Image 1 (spheres, rainbow, N blue to C red):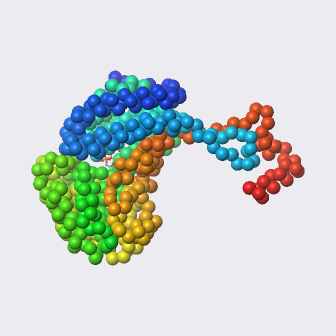
Image 2: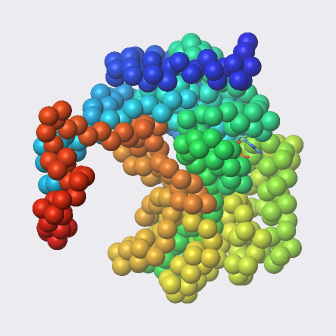
Length: 464
Ligand code: NAD
């Protein structure tokens, strides 16, 4: 990059109205090219993800390349319709006027992304931002440098720097970018850094989307299909080595099925990850996170947690086996922070409302999951808890549906993304009313407030 961050930012200023007013054909052309270049580089993307995270080719293709391309194509197919002005009804006292919503670009968008899905979580918001007519400056995570390098080359092939730029670096680079008056900031990462980003956005009153994390509960009821629940929990917890924002963070298991469920869990872990050498078991991203997780596990055991499954680890290989621990009560260090790794604490409950109270004691989560065959339990759980999203009798898969919004609530984030919701998130919803240049009934309701006008106003106030 030849120019400084500030110069790069200024370079994008003129596009606010140029690209911002582009027709759908131009935007779709960019998306088409991006699609072509990503597809052509899919092998290089998988290699980069392997080097950064030890992600197997299968996992990289399914959870990063495929998800990005399917969402891109969905947006491309629908963009012309989404961009149309939306005609809006008028209340009766505005009869004769026309109202509409115009979806226009916000301007310059800053995207800051994390390392766990470094390709997906950079490209998906970028696609939404471009579809909505914005320019983008992307700051990927400093912990996934191979992926950043391949993204840089892909983006340079499709966009010039007045449209899209990528700056590599850590918090210092992010801070420099956050000091600039972007029209919108889109941050994916931890709740802790999300707070910093929000403060920076407040300085310029920039639009803000926060995609954060948290402790996503998973409840396994006494009425669950036990073996299915166990196999799905093992898959969704240890996929990407638990380094997923919506991974089941802890389990609440009904006492009546505890021992049968734990037996099944053990069998499933053995079946999927029993062989330590398996190349498709993703590793922990770096030593820092390995030490954090190892520290968590050690202090959990010191705090009285019973190690049920796993526990083996090797720092030089950044390896930690799928690990399950039983907690005697929820007042435990493992229940304080998001785990974001292959450790799964289990708590036992007797009554559903007791489990719900425990969930209430923690901040609203990004996802929540329940395994049950009982419709009343399912309804009770959904009604009595709050989270950004959720799944019944499975985990994670709500992310795969690009017709559904993705996002959190309070500590787990704000704003929505995916498909149409991304287009909406990156658009300014401008409300426009048009009246006749000659006569409008609304004119009658203004000054001077004569007696008969007041009469009409009081009649309207009574009727409407
Ligand atoms: P992180 O918050 O440490 O870092 C995210 C980004 O912020 C990185 O690009 C990093 O360089 C930057 N950053 C770090 N410190 C900063 C600072 N002081 N000022 C400005 N920028 C800073 O998160 P991470 O470790 O990369 O990712 C893990 C977290 O992300 C987890 O909490 C996880 O739940 C969350 N996450 C959320 C989603 C989602 O869609 N909601 C998806 C993936 C990950």
